[in-house]
View 1 (cartoon, rainbow over the protein chains, first blue to last red):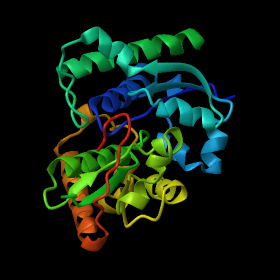
View 2: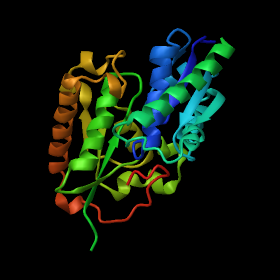
View 3: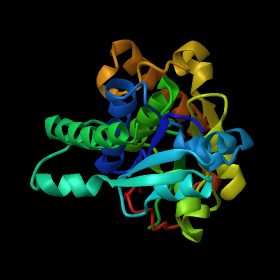
Length: 130
Length: 150
């Protein structure tokens, strides 16, 4: 089994929550836990290519979703990945009521705060596992 | 009166700069294009959503925007939804080396040169939209997804 935990966001394109998911995951895999985690393009997983299915099958994954449709979690599970943790952006956003996080294109300072908090949560999970 | 709408679908790939550029260029089109109304859909909704999401490319003439030559948005749309009306391969516009950059992916790390790439890709999307016959523009309604991408 590949030791690196796969961390996969929805990257939803319609609202800021998708960008929060995306940036949180990128902060985790590029800055906080580059040795222990990596991401895979969700669009590649959606494509159903044999190569990506082989890469993700039976692999431990953390998904990060921006809306209740849970696209990342559902697609990873469909591809055979083992979803060990489902992170919901809205759970963290709820703790910052009334703040302006930015848009689906650009994060404001409060959005970066949420990104840092979610990324820290993911990093704790990864470090507990590995 | 029904509005004319074109679908623009980005791969938004997380592994490399090309995905970030595809996402930002698509956002730019959604926010700034004036001559035709554009709509989008989160690509993973083809599997995580329902029939309405899978009908996206049947309802709207759709342009796919992919960050690399795997062309995930194009292939997935044609696999799950319907024939696309045009496609953009970002790696052909900004170069493969740039598109496959795995170090600079986060929005906050983008420099002026990357924002210029976004503009360049956005203008190619506009050209691609311009190639669609106005007769195929959709005036149909679409409920959109949970993230409110319409």
